[in-house]
Figure 1: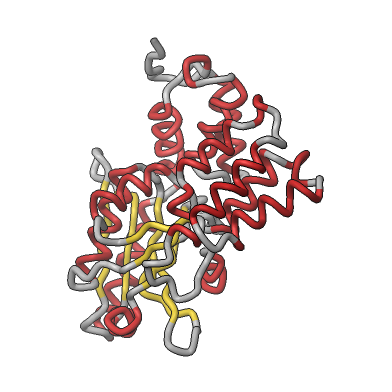
Figure 2: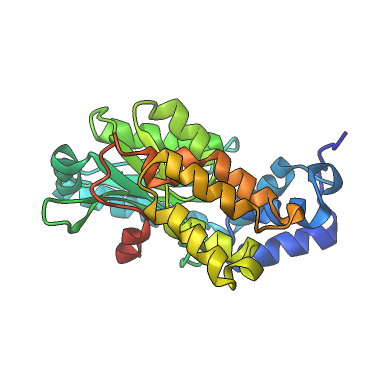
Length: 293
């Protein structure tokens, strides 16, 4: 049975740090080791060890003076906008780790256009490698609008639960009809707990990017690529999707099917044919978030 390691060995720690510095998400970092080792039982350490190492690394980087500067800035904004809200989460040692904020205009916009929310933690362009994740919506002119924003030092289920609860509190408890995210199990767990009335949709662009990593050989074949893109975008019914998908998997070697099986299990979260009864404002991906990076 795989046991937790209080101290990661130097080789693993260096590899995790290099991947983190390159901008990989914590869940992607551990997934790399699982895939490379051929299973969780062969990795040698737990996902929690990986997350704890990254959390410790980032906490050391976040200087007290910088954290106080963020608080001072929020207080200044709140003094000029009584509807400006901000909150922060602290870790077990009472150190600030995650921040969320939303101003009066964003909260008013949410009341009018909050049916669909786009949330993406992909971007890490700050010196702390924190996830900068805006909550984005679309107005009646199909223009992107900002509902709020967060900086996350860690991306655990509990952190996302805190974040979505903070978001709901700022928005007077009004849940969106649909929320778009990338594929992250911790985030999915939190959405089920905090946003049970929201339809959780996965970004098709991210699925396409992941497919390029896992199925690059097959995507170079035109017949496979046509079938895969048809599953992503052009199936008019659930029955059509099942028929096309059945044809698709026959073209893939069994040893390469694990990622396809995982995506198939989540088909109701990304294939448009399974979500016709849910309002999505014509959105298929989280790429609108890039406008606010």
